Structure formats: structure tokens, C-alpha cells
Amino acid sequence: MLITPEHEKLQYSGRIDWSDRNAPVFVFPCTSVGMWFTGDTLKVYVRNKKVYWDNYLGCILDGEQTKLRLPDEGEAVIEIPVNQTTEDGSHEVLLFKRQDSCHEAAFLGFEIEDGAEILDPPKRPRRRIEVYGDSVSAGEVSEAVDYVGKPDPEHNGQYSNSWYSYAWMTARKLGAEIHDIAQGGIALLDGTGWFNEPDYIGMETAWNKIHYNPAFGPAADWDFTQYTPQVVIVAIGQNDNHPEDYMKEDYNCPRSVRWRREYGELLKKIRGQYPDAWILCITTLLEHDPSWDRSIDEVCGRLQDEKIRHFMFRRNGRGTPGHLRIPEAEEMAEELSAYIEELDIQW
Image (cartoon, rainbow, N blue to C red; front, side):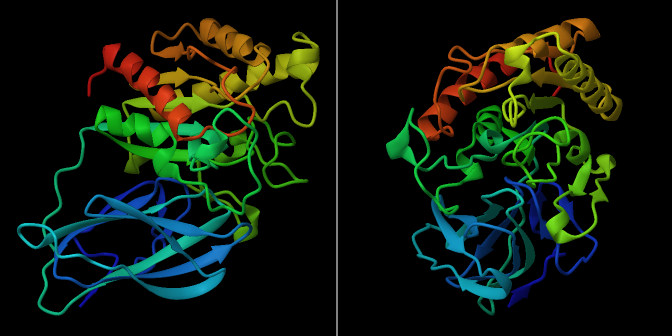
């Protein structure tokens, strides 16, 4: 029995392109679809478009996580083994995007056995967060746990998993839904960072988009009425030192002054979309010069908005020369979720 993408009992989360109702496109990490069902058959129908790396979807079935290898291009039917171990014969599956826009995946539906049932989903969380960030927020290379505190190993996408990003870990600790607007290599400003080399695209362009990678065609705007978070985390300021670490070299040079001005403008734009949200500005444990944190602190102070805060981790900028592995992401999530719980948030 085919469960089409528009089935009322499927539960989605994330910025999703619904322009084709029969093939919603998952763009951002942490984007997911959940289903509760009976029977011992489960297949997923997908279509993939690849830019780089090997591409995988994450799958959690009855609490056990696996990754599903996708074709480089085109459609696939992937069978997911189901073990009849639950007492009542029911199952829970969560299919999610492990990676950033190194690929886009269209979800074409699930298949369960004839005569099985799709069950009612649980209520959505009242708590909602949104994250704007780079590869650390996306969980890139997070599963390379043998390299804690070390540079990255050679990889081809197999270690990247948004489930183990500090962003999704923080959401789970808070019992919150998440939209994770995270892209590896992205900086604040166009023309800097690492994303879409050599025509670098920054968060100033991508923050309000559903499609932003030119490899997939024209950019498309996101409809902000579809999701309103109570907490927004802005985790930008670590890829901005490429190709030049101008903030470190001269804190008051014209480029540094411009960066602080544009960072403030981004915060104002986010505030314009979410008048009541708390906006938390951070960097991460990934090694970077403290001048970027100093700039963020200066901008937050200048805005004089009680609900825009700069949060610093205990080991901020001193944790690892490579991407955060699972234990380091857990460390960040513990500190960040504890801080958020102390705020006067009207969940």
C-alpha cells in the first residue's frame, strides 16, 4: 500500500519545497518526515539530485538509526527491514536529511504492506527553534568520533549527520521542533567563506530562501508564515575568515566595520520576521580568532534589544581544529539548552 506524500497522517518538519505536492523536496539538514504504522514491510520512494559527495538519508526505525545511500541522480526504491519486536505491532519511522545542499532529495512516498495501517501521529511540540549556521550547525563530519579534537579525516559525506549536530541535539533536549538553515562553508557575506566556490554565497543571501544553491536552478524565497520559532540561533562568523582573516588582522578596518554592520542588518531582518522571538548569537567550539566573537558582542550591545543575546560556550573557539564530533556537539547542546531554559520564553 502506497502512502503518498500528502497523506494527512504523515508529520513533516523543516523548510520543504511543496511546489510539487507529490514530490516535496528536502533541502536543509534536519528536514524530516515521520510515520507511525503497522505491519512488517517498509519501503521509501525517493529522487535525488547530487552536487558533491556521496548522499545519504537518515532513517530511525523504532529507535534504531541507519543511513540510506541515495543514487547520484534519479529515483530509487529503498527497502527498510522491519523487525516485529514491538508489543502492539506498531512502528515509528523518521526519515531525515543528514546533509546540507550537497544534494536535494524529493520524497515520493512510503510503502507498507496491504492491510496494514498508518496510525495517528503525536501532537507537534509547542516549542520551536530555528538555527542559521554553517557546517557545524549541519552536523558535518560529526560521526568521525575517532577524530575528537583533531582535524577532519578524508571523507566523502559518510560521516555527516544532522541528527548529531549540536543544533538538533539542543532541540531534542528542549523538546522542540527545529528548522536548521545550515550550509557547510557559508559565511555572512557573499564573496566570502567556502560555499559555492568561486562565486561564494553568504547567509545574507541564503537566510530567507528555500532554494539557494545555483546548482539546482534559480533561488526561491521561503514563506515565513509557515513556521514561527520562539528561539532563533544565529551561528555565523567562522567561515568569514576565508579567504582573509581581516577581523583578526585589523578589527577596525573598513571590511571589519562592514561585517559588523551587515551582521546587525541580518539580525534586524530576522527580528522583522519574528517580532517576539529570542535571538541568540553564537559561534562554536571550532577554532577561530576571538575577534569575531568580540564583533558579535559589539553588534548585540549596539542593537539594545533585550531579546537579542550573545552566548559564549565554556570552550568557545578553543575546542577542535576540525568539525565537531558527537561528544563535542553534545557539550555545546548541554550548555546552550541549559541557557535557553533559563530565559523567560513564552513557549
